[in-house]
Image (tube, rainbow, N blue to C red; front, side, top):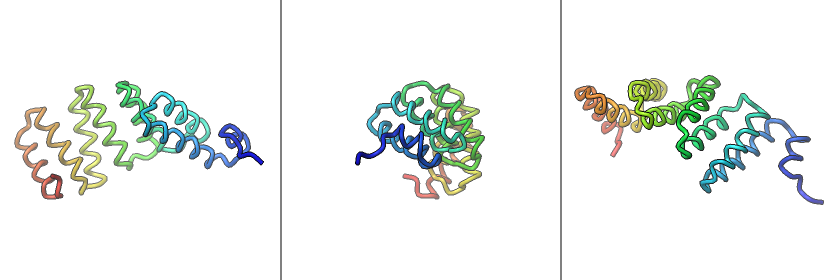
Length: 153
């Protein structure tokens, strides 16, 4: 007896587990820097269960790694719509916005990360760097001090 193919799983299996299978396949491709193929898998997972946050986030990361930051932002926005308390998505969105030189919007993202998880040292550090870019030096120093207080190197 042979194992079912991925398509067999989708056609006959449990919908949620099928979506997770495609997500896992996408993650494996992503880890191998095969971002376009990973996006195809994430799309299949989203098609099966559009309420899952992870495929939207991971699809955004794949677009980001392809230099397609606007497409990444669309994915992050959908993930945030599904789960506005997911810190990682806010961080990813903030990084994409920094890449697009949209520093004010990026700052809002990292402030949201800090609201959700006030002990996120990376978010405090990112906030400091963005504030420095915006020439808000006193605020940047305060944010950097908070990052150090949280043991950010």
